[in-house]
Every structure is written in structure tokens, then in C-alpha cells.
Image 1 (cartoon, rainbow over the protein chains, first blue to last red):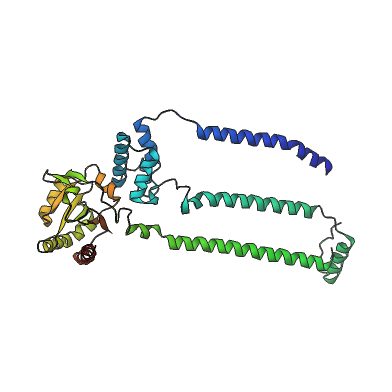
Image 2: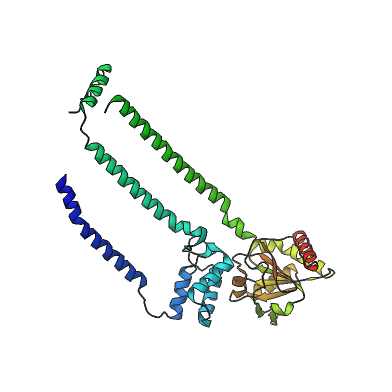
Length: 168
Length: 194
């Protein structure tokens, strides 16, 4: 028991190090600048974030529906004029067609539930599993007392048809 | 562990399980309520952020190759009908629009009706109007900029713009003359009271 606790304590720094390295790599990956985008790359990246308002599950980038083509043209026009950045163009289209046109929901207001709920459920599930495993381990470690044995013996004596062995 | 403590432990476990089951049930019920109440399709069908705001800039050409600018229609009630000659609801509502347009000749104040051609060819639109009547101006929207400016994804859609250039009403789907007359009368009465 003492040895396992000590080995657990020894492995903590390694886990911590792995955690820090993972967070650093994620931060570097997320903040990495791919360099200046061409106009076409901007148009493609914006239209990939927008859902075709008349199709199911297709992006404006992929769809050939009339409404999607109109939106693509509008994005191209706004990129060409250079008066709005990508977020402002997406906001313009969202304002006209509503939130359903966003393929990736916003992280504010009611839409934020899409992001918050899965994380909350994951954390609660992991916590629940951890608590359950700990309880099981604790229960496994229990040694039946004389009272427990007496109780089982008495119950078995009351029900002679039950032939299960009494655990020792 | 004696008999009482075993029974007590079983009772605690049972109580906890029922609490968790109740909590899960409440969460599922809340999701269901949210889904029923939110109903985004209905909410967005009658509304638009443009309502009550200045109409977008509309500059284009008409089917007879004249310039069209919405801002030059200030002082008149304007109705935009987004249209496509192959769209079945557009074809079904067309007689209603013809009747509405005819009645505007004697209406006070009259409303100017414009068809905004959505994803359609000049020839197809000309052929449709020659066959089905409809002597009002048809405005081209070749690049879809007018449709996007108004947030129109499907046709038909009908929009009403007041003499000050503010968007007042949006109809998604086919309209009837009766509906247009009723809503316009309400809008015009409210406008005169302003």
C-alpha cells in the first residue's frame, strides 16, 4: 500500500510535465500565424464557416445552390473592397440570414451552450467515474468482520436452498 | 457491519440513485422544453434585423435596361417581390400580384411593385410575364447582391418599404391580394399617424 502510494507520488512530476508540454503545444498551434492570406484564400476560409441557408449541412464554400452562390459573391465583393475583416463579413451575413447560417456556433449567448455543455458533461462524467472507481476500490479492500460473517451465515441458514459459498 | 448498517447503506444508495435519476430526468425535460420553445425556423420566418431600419442600398438595372435605384423612390410606398419564373409558389401567387397591382392604379397612396429577379434569365422572365400578365418593373439581381442584402434565401419573398426608405414588413412565401391590402392599410395608417 505504502509502496504504491510512493510510486504514484513519483509519477506526478512526469504527468505535470506532459500536461505543461501539451498546453504549450496547443497554445503554439492555435496562435500560429500562417502568413498573409490571398483574397481567394480569405473568400474560401469565410465561406467554409458559413452554412448554405437552403441546404442541409453544406457549407457555402461547397454548395452550388442559388442562395449559397449569392452569399459567395457577396463575400467576394466585400473581400475585394477591403472595408471589412473576416469577422465583420461573417457578422454581416449572419445579421441578414440569422444564426442558422453559421457552421460554427458563436461562443456567446445561448449558442455558448453548444460549447459549454459537452465540456460540463465530460467533466461531470470523469468526476463521477473517478468517484465510483474510488468507492469500488474502497469496498473491495473491506474485510468482512465477524458480525458480517455471522449475518451471512444466519441468512443462509434461513434459506437452505441458497447453496452459494460464504466468502472467506 | 451488522444487519442495520447493511440496510441503511442500501437505503442511502437507493436514495442517491433516485436523486440522480430525477436530476437526469429534469435535464432531459429542460432540453425538450428549450427545443420546443426555441423553434428557430418559425422565429426567423417573420422577422429580420432590417425591419424598422433603413432599407439596404439597391442599385441595379431593369429588364428594359433602365437604371434602378431604391433611394430615388423615396416618397413612395415600395414593394419588392423576389421572384423566379420556375418557382411554383411564385407562379401560384402571380395572379394575386396582378390583381394587387391593378388595384394600386386607383389606390391612395399607391404602392409601387417591383419584381426582383432571382437566379433567372431575362428571356425566361420576359416569356413568363408575356404569358401571365404583370405590367410592373422587373429589376435584375444577377450577382445576388439584392437578395443577400435583404437576407433572402428562398423565393418568393415580399418586402414593404415606407416612403422614408424604412423596411416595414417581410412576407416569406406566397402572398395574397387580401393579405397585402390588409397589412398595407395598417402600415399606412400607422405611417400617417407618425
